[in-house]
Amino acid sequence: MPELTFLPIRDSKMQGTPEFAQSLNYGSAPSLRHIVLYSGETKTTWERTIVDFVVSALAEATIIAAKLVREISSLASGAGPTAKLSRCTKAGDWVESQVSWLRYKSGADWTDEGGDFDDTGPPAALTYNEPTVAGEHEIGGLLPFVEDAIESRGGVVSLITRLADETPDVDTGATWFAKDHPQSWQLVVEYAPPDPGRRTTATRTPVGITPARPARRPYAPAGPAGRPSPMRPPVAPVRPHPTRRRRT
Image (cartoon, rainbow, N blue to C red):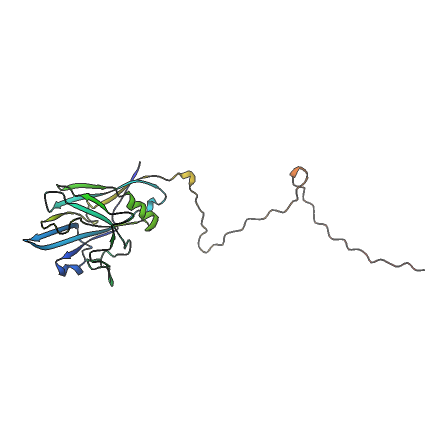
């Protein structure tokens, strides 16, 4: 089956620790990460990521499978930590140049700090393991997110990624490249094209042009055996003459 690759239309990281970073925007950052870092027993860094992909180009197709492909540039620990992908409930509404840990756009706060997401679904959150070494890494199982986006979200796959355990007490996390990097993360969708025999193409009339009405054919009543009778010229109505009285 063919595949179609989608790049993010917007992405950013959101930082919850240190506290002063909660209001900062990282929409132009070249890399993203979900990560927790410590200094001794004190948590010094806590980050999540947010991303939108638009898959409306596949609205008429049958979705077979979908995966997220990232180029991991670094890992905060040797063992691959468990992470989560959840559907962001502000699909298409958050602003890349304004989003932060506290708000999804200027003047609009998240209901819950760190981003509003739905783990219950459908689609339910996807749990996976990060790799143990840097390099290309694929996350399968995103079919429900793509189907949901096409059916209910205007074609927008909106995701928030985070560590499954955000209080691990040890440095944990992964870093990958953002949308403006040549090795940007990608959503790869396998699909079956629509049956061309079932599609119809509507013809639109250009704006400002009144569509011409089809010329009417003169009516010819059916003759014998359903054949149209030859047209006859119209006959003028005959008016009766007044009756004259006879003289007696």
